[in-house]
Length: 517
Image (cartoon, rainbow, N blue to C red; front, side, top):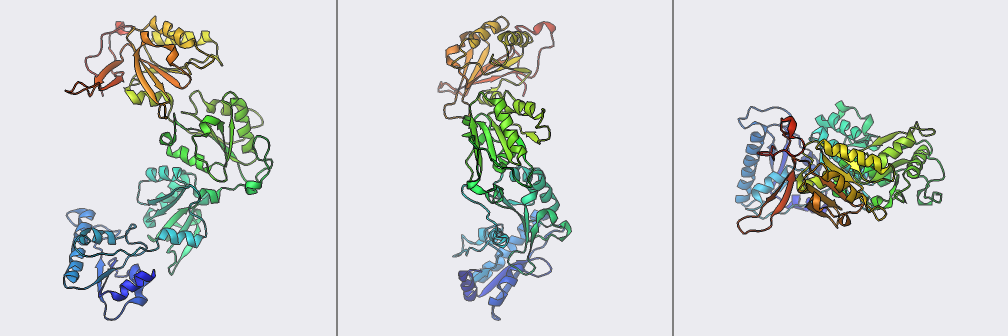
């Protein structure tokens, strides 16, 4: 208890506190030595806690009625000129029952809220483990959330505390394990109080867990095992020169999406935070926040095989490695290179996972609507790893099948003619006014998304940071939001999911009567 809280209790006429039907109140027991015989006590007894209720409004109805009646009882004391102190465990406005009194009374009576030590801070102190360091973010979650939601949030958290355990403990434990954090998760029960207990979450008996307990996933920086710290010897490329004793390494291949943190999945956030080493093309590594104790190994974009073997070598030494790609790692990116290397000696036993990411085609499509709403094909126009003859043959086949096309790697400083040649091939099968979406740096600071006619596609406006989405014969372009003022509005593009049943419709069928949603 704070000094201010003790003074408030001493000055109060009425002491109010919440309790279950058994009448015992943790808040009162904490403050018991400061209560006087002449204090008027107002126990606010919950009508229901973990049981059921026959209230016509169900659990919520019973609780709303209880809070209203409790507030009325306290208001009667206040109207009589008495000072009321409401006791709350931890901090009054942190998952505390007092907040329901506050919302009903604070606008009518002079109110002071005295902050308290939360169970989060108390648990960290008892564990003697940092919760957050540097730029880490602390996530606090109620254990009553659905398991899938808990798992997603825990997977992306730097550090976390899960409260309200008790009956939720089995669900919380499963979520912690699925998020890959069970090994370092801790358990704290009744921190700083009588009956306090701490230990590993994995070793805790579910039947022994009370409501007043928390699961703690401490600082990843504190938990990250970096042998020798910043003084550990490293090689010229930045790799560790020694093995990590007693540790099992692995490689996880992740995608950053088309741009920055907004495009990361929770699972990818967690994998990036848990890694000891980040390996990737420097441009993509720059999208990942710098974390203390984590090593970054950047390289050029044209050394995929070497980068994959380097990451696998680190993992063989016991390091937890994240190989970073842009977009989705399995779409024209690093997952293929890593798996190819990992399927050969001496890397066959190195664990490798691939996590999905938002790919450029989906990002660009979303910006204009739903051009990929029906069947589509994905091709790369780069002839660095396959001959142009193969690309041209696949373009003709996909265009002849009337598929929407997502064209990756359309051009670069050293490849300037492919877009023009692709346009010529596509015009053999598509009408000149077929919509083409040019998405450049989607999600980034230089984002540009335009819609042009296929006949007007200018190769000079396409570079390596651009993706092209070429519509099918069914793809629709429309203007929306112009309004009565005659404004420009926005261009939307979509490909209907319904396709004509007539066999002769492929080629240049009539536009659909109405798009389906």
